[in-house]
Length: 210
Image (cartoon, rainbow, N blue to C red; front, side, top):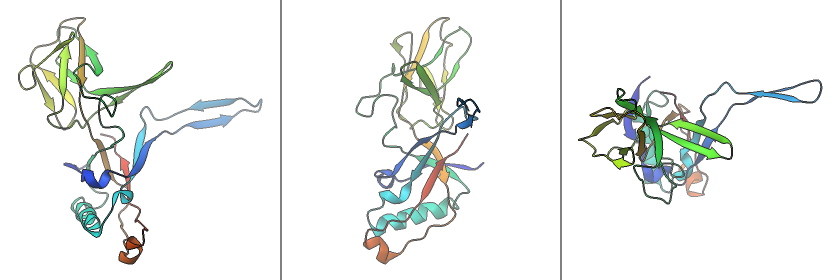
């Protein structure tokens, strides 16, 4: 799969509508009970980029981006304004935001992830597209220096430490991140008259698995 390490214009994604979807298979039994299962380990996000358009210049920028990605052919980065940090949207990123592993004295590489917890449930979301320059990391409640104590693969979301964390040491990280997506259509239909009347084109975008 081809992926372009470029972000969809953030000013156009602001105002878009979207969020996570799950796939749940429900079987109704003859006794009235249900059996529920899911074939998906991770949720998948969908957005409508058309709702962020505010002018014909925005439409032109969208079309240029769409053509440069060859429609659905190439993936790209998307900023989800409602969920783009390791902390709360109103918070400031800290190196202690998320637990990403436990040191064993040998392992050097740790993948970024984000926890979604409510009551007894907890979901760990893999984060493969951190925003360059935003990743903070620490070991055993001590913040480390980016570029000296650790390096980040911005294309995969993997942190590599210069020295393996000590056995039992908690490894943490904080970051901003994008969603890897592609256009979910090979056609964009825009009418200048309808756009000026407030009728926005539908431009579906869907998360891709990496």
